[in-house]
Amino acid sequence: MDKLQITGGRPLEGEVRISGAKNATLPILAAALLADAPVTIANVPHLQDVTTMIELLGRMGVAVTVDERMQIEVDPTGGIEPFAPYDLVKTMRASILVLGPLLARFGKADVSLPGGCAIGARPVNIHVAGLQAMGADIRIENGYIKARAARLRGARLVLETVTVTGTENLMMAATLADGETVLENAAREPEVVDLANFLIAMGAVIHGAGTDRIVIQGVKSLHGCNYRVLPDRIETGTFLVAGAITAGHVRATHTCPAHLDAVLLKLQAAGATVAQGEDWVEVDMRGRRPVAIDVRTAPYPAFPTDMQAQFAALDCVADGVGTIIETVFENRFMHMLEMRRMGAEIRLEGNTAIIKGVARLTAAPVMATDLRASASLVLAGLVAEGRTEIERIYHIDRGYETIEEKLSQLGAQIRRVPN
Image (cartoon, rainbow, N blue to C red; front, side, top):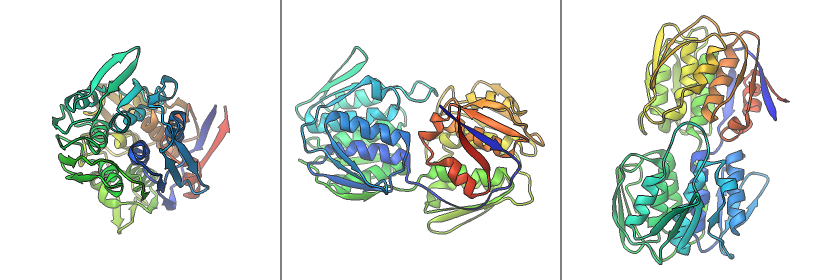
């Protein structure tokens, strides 16, 4: 198993090209199950989670072809076995996204209850309740969700809490349902909008994506299409924080600044100069120490939980005291304990972290506990004195495409080595 070695102390400088969004790619790959002809998906990031989803589709009998540019053709027209086994689903929670498409198109789905990052319960009860309201017969037996429906029926679904995967699963299922489905309290994330646009490209009738009320008119079938995945806003934000934490100057290209309003406001509050164009955004913190900021996570368009750990790292070396309040997932502060090993002054009180910035962090061996936590440890390593070693980096490979190569291009001293 590999680890990352980082020698800190270098300001980052330069441009970085942003990859396609993991959190848009995974539901779009699942949605390809709904088509009655092949679909082609471009701007797909080369990530472990994407590989897992491709393997899951292949296990079901879907023909998947990947070219050297990570453009993927998905052909779901063969004999499909609507079964998602535990050995794959346990490694990635997003596997639950095949439930809605399988049930809507094939009338049955046996999907293992999911695993994934250890950042909280993230129950699937909203997915199940929504499908039951659309006429599905669902039992949970031996760790599997077993769903059956001759044809789903449109329904008005009021989601108990804002859930991205719940919104996506039910929206996909509704595209082939009989009649109109209304999702109230729907998630508004750009990745939900991207999925809706993909479904529309296949012939779905969807209105309101990007608002908290999505209306879907069911159709008889969906056809093939060509589609390009939107840029990854979390990767963009992570590299911008890397520029700010190292007192550097970083421009992210091939991205969408409009999806980062809450993140860019916090970077400006921390003292960075932010500039942006239609498909680029840059942060300039040259010659300055960040100012401590307060962060409270909430569903989009508020501050994203997936950027919480990165800003915690920024606060660790900032001037002053900042608080991080995590409202979306419980158990998402494990990275704080690792950063303490590097000299960070952090006090935890329930879902709140109070961070007093220190002049410098010092290198230490640390261990990644989840995807975004691993990103925060990389950021801390970039500013720590000495050589930091990060273990269990398979977490980071789930969500960041060649992060060490991209950081090296910006001047970081970072390398991947065998453990």
